[in-house]
Image (cartoon, rainbow, N blue to C red; front, side, top):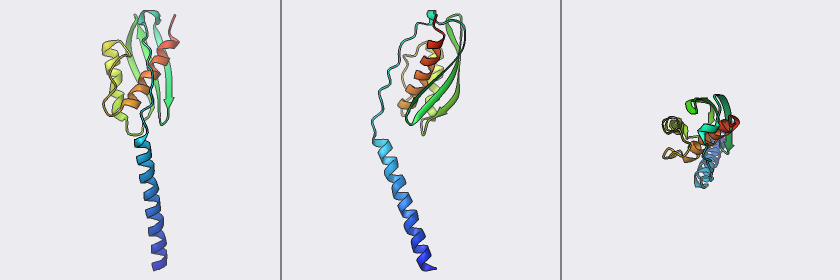
Length: 128
């Protein structure tokens, strides 16, 4: 019985060490540079547009509603974000400023940029 407990303990410790190493590896990676283009809203026709963007380990799918050359609504359909859930607040800033050139949410820069890039992709679909 003691031998089984020792083996289980070694397995648990090994798994914990691998998880810890993986966590620090992901945290040590630099935030990828994601360029967000400026979109001229006067060139986007009214409608609903779905856009998506993925930059490992973050993915976002959004539905953007445009009416009278204004972004009325941005719905986040999917956001695989790891720890960047708070980045979703960036959509309110986009709606308020009517621009994709907004500050990323502090502590969730990569997730913010992926969401902005998904919105950009959606708006590109509505360009005249």
